[in-house]
Length: 522
Ligand code: FAD
Image 1 (spheres, rainbow, N blue to C red):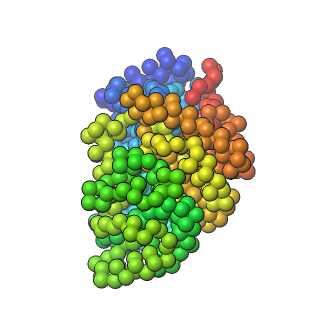
Image 2 (tube, rainbow, N blue to C red):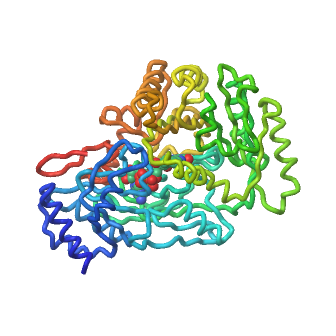
Image 3 (cartoon, rainbow, N blue to C red):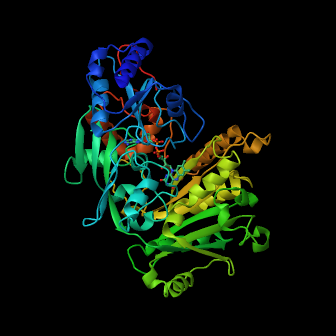
């Protein structure tokens, strides 16, 4: 009853605000099982994201209880005379308003308010079926009960399954297992027409390929079937340092060439240390206080060091051989002698490592600050030019956050998915994960860092380095067309097929919604 009252109120507000020509009784007939909320706290949180640089207020927020709730709401938007935007929101950890909508409703997929279906593990077939809004940390907890775990991760687990699958989902396992989108067997998706469809490589394959890496443009993922492996118990986590960029990247590329072999590291990442700022960022805990890094004592070339970060997973049963296995792999590498920092911890603690850093930053009020992040895929053939122009050039000695750099094998990415990567067998992720501070130091401010991001993109453009943005953000369709390159025709054809009124994920600013009669805005 209360839901119906709220729903009527929400619809009336929609009619007043956007001129929706919709019969309210029709939406009432949808009989949503979840909660439709106009609570300013709900609307407020759906109008913000982790980036902290944009706001857009939805009219209302739905906490769905089932895929049918999602389907009914999308269908009503699709069939209404005026139309209205619908954005699925996972955990809102986008940077540039990608999960927002200023002209319609947000479906809050993450969180337990709507009481969505819990994860279901199949031990026999080694997969888990999860709700699209489930957070990866909860997926991990549920699969560990069976001694199983997903194979491919993100560095941070408080992200939703639907949110990361809409991008790719990458971390240090991607060189071996591919991104998270390469580790999904099946999806349930609500298209922009409000149809609830199951899709996989065998069934509705066009929709399946479109949705993976599809930036929320083709449908809302309500269920994902994720591949599992036996979960390791422990992790040997190692960091070694380099002052020479070529030695660093050669070693990274060697390590990822071992994909699929038993004698390899299980995770390969790395980061750039251009200043003592490492001490202040969320990757720093590893080194201190037991392992302080004295950058000045390591003869860094131009003040820059590169840190290779690798892990080897193991079970109790092979605990006695882990030292030799790690030693044999390290022997092949050319890092600075005596710069080996090692720790050993349970698998879960390793996977959940960034959350610990989050709690520390939250305690210092440094988590909810603007985040002008820039994530780029850089082709292997130009990574040295990128190093010279950006790490040793544009950045100066102030990064305002971690800079990750690690290579991946393109053959682990399915070219049929919507995501775009550089056209080379190996490409690097370079992630500038910056936090802007309002502390009087101009070089740490939002404007300065945003300008620096623009300079980096301009440098790549002028130097002919064909980077692709990961978690891309553009404001004009021309830029999107350039981003997708050869894939644009297919991308826009799929949009016509699965979301012909352009009502989904308008916050990505790729397609203007086709609303009547007052035109559209993002
Ligand atoms: P949201 O921000 O809520 O949504 C993102 C987009 O996906 C929106 O367009 C939204 O409409 C759409 N969407 C959300 N749910 C669904 C759904 N169910 N169906 C269809 N579309 C949907 N990424 C990596 O790959 N690797 C990392 O290691 C990594 N680390 C991160 C660490 C931090 C601290 C943060 C803030 C982000 C990180 N990311 C990483 C980026 C992250 O994967 C993306 O920002 C992702 O979109 C966030 O998930 P979310 O649930 O918060 O999505």
